[in-house]
Image (cartoon, rainbow, N blue to C red; front, top):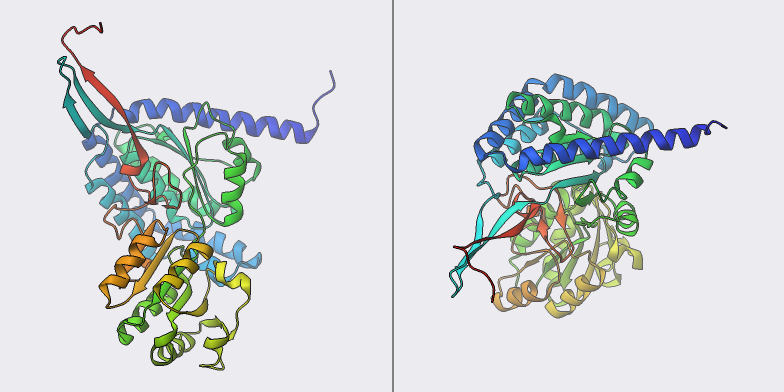
Length: 429
């Protein structure tokens, strides 16, 4: 028999590795699904302690990732997403403890009722099963996703970006220490052991082992997953988020909200990428906003009316209205009123997070009702688009789809339900 070529052998090895991960995950999921809340919470707290104890190792692994990413020419925004420091490591540990403090969704009765024939019917939350999470450069997603899946009784197979591979490996090792301490299977949280992109393709075909795929990353990754997956997808699309400053906005509030929405962290999906301003108020409100953003190092790309207000504004192209910059860049356009702002957002936005700044309650109500996005805000920064800020402990991502989950995907969104029916010998006539 002719031996297989190297490429074929490599593909076969990867396939075997992925199937082994899937089988281990399904076995772990069976134990997790029946684990008590106390046991899962003990594991989460032990994971948090392991992350704090392993901070030096996490920073060392991350330093290697950062050096390699710098050599590859990653942008400053991407490097910021990748970087772990003491504060971010502590935030990961604290996030796991906050997840432990949440109510356990598994077993919660969503609704119950009695039928005339005496049957008692209850709709009860249960885990989704095995969840495959595919994400890019942010290593904290490893801890968040592992913790959320653990709390909700799901096993997780994690495939992070190649640029964060060392950091994610070190984080998973901490999670495994916590799981061991609580007597839960390490296979409850597994990392794909290779940065080979072919592993993504393998995951997307494992319908017998993985129940749901959650992609979190750029448009290219999401489109690939949606096009190739044979498994249901909870999609986290790009964050082309908007702030609309209405004619009835408080000028100081507008400056503050826009600054935070754009500049707090430019590389997160909740960062504002587009600013819309009511034309009638632009001359009195917009110059201060431009001055503030420019002083902070933000490049401003605007329409003709906006460029006329400040020579630092460069011309915006059509592509700017739908761009996710993930950097200190913002597009600015003047619109007639709230209705034109709504139409612009629904056309160019990504249905992620959009905000209106106004003192006019009627305009705010119209915006909140008619903007077709997962999260809409009034007089608040788009950077509140975060599961932790919603009181969910953490999130796997912001779902911009309509089925199963929308907005921050936390522990409750990682469950489905079954019907539990209790009788006393009833038979159907």
